[in-house]
Length: 443
Image (cartoon, rainbow, N blue to C red; front, side, top):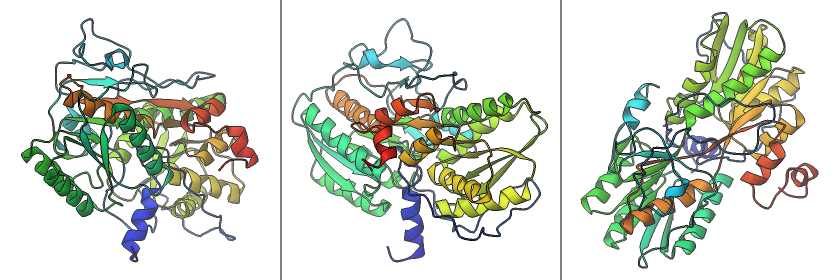
C-alpha cells in the first residue's frame, strides 16, 4: 500500500461503490486555480490522473425508459412497470416484492446489454428471470432451513459504503439464522481468491461475493463451480458462472442525471445549444460506460449540443479538469458528475471560479445531498448501500432452501432533488437527518 498504484486504488475505493453511496471528502480548492485546460475540440481530454485497472465499481443492469423526475419527486425508489399474470417464483417467500422485467422464464441477457455500452462480458447466469425490488422488503427475510455456513467476501470495508454493506450483511445473516464468514479483500483480487479457496476447504454451504476485479474474479468463480458451491454476487462480474447477481441499474442512473439536467436547461428558456461537459474515470469501467450511455441518450435529440468528456480519479483531479473546462468552453451550459468524486471536484471548481453552471450527479454521499439542499447541485440519481446486502442474503438463503430465485435482482434508484432531499437523506442514512448533518450534530 506504499506505492502510487495502491494510493490510486484507495482513492478509487471512495468513488463508485456499490454498492453504493460513498462519502468522499471534498478536495480543498487550491489557492490558485490550476492551469489545466482541455483542448478546444470536443474530444476526450483526460486529466493527469494515473490510469488504474477497472476493479472497483458495481457492474450495471439494463433499463427501459428514462426515469422522469416530477416537480416534487417523492423519496420512493423506481420499479419496473409490468408484472406477469403468473408468477415464476410463487414458491419464493419474497415473491411479493418482485416486479418482473421481461420474461421471468428466460435468462437475462446481461452480456448483450453490456455490449451496447462497449463492455465485453462473458457471464453465465444459472437462474432465470430478472426482477426489480424495493429498498425495504415488505416480506420477511427468509429463515434458513438449517444452520448454513455462508462466506461473504467484500471488496473493501474502510469507506462508508463498504462498512454499511458489511453491517447490513451481518444483520441479515442474524435474521436468516446462518453463520457468516467475512473476508475484506481490500481491493486485492488475489486475496479474495484465497479466501474462496479457504472456504471451499471448509465446505461452506454458499458464498456471497462482491468482486474486486470484474474479470479477475473468474478464477474464484471457476473454483466455486468445480466445488458445486452456490454463489450470489453483489455487483455482476464480467466473466465466470454465477447463480444470481444483485446489481444497480446504472443506465437508468445516467438517464436520471440527464433528465434532471435537461429539465433545468429547458426551464431557462434558452436554446439547447452549446457544450455540456461530464467527468468520468480515465479507463473503461462497466459502471461508468453504462451511466454515460444513459446520460448521453437524453441529449441525442439536440443537434446543436456538444458533449465533452474529461477524466480523473480524485476530487482534486476533477477540480483541475473542470477548472480548465470552464476556461476552455465559454459556451458551457451544463455539466454532470458521473460519480461522487467528480461531482465534488466540479462543485469546488465552480465555487473557486465564481461560476454557476447547472450540475447534476450520480451518488448520494452526504456532501452531495447537502449540495442539493444548498442549490449547488440540481439533483442526483441515488441508490442504497443497505438494500443490496439484504437482497443478496435473501437470494442465497432461498436458493439453499430449494426455492426458485431470479437470476438478476435490480435494487432501486431514486431521483433526488431539493424537493425530497431531506427524506432521501433519512432513507439512505437511517438514524440521521439532513438538518442534523447541516448543523454538525452528526457526521
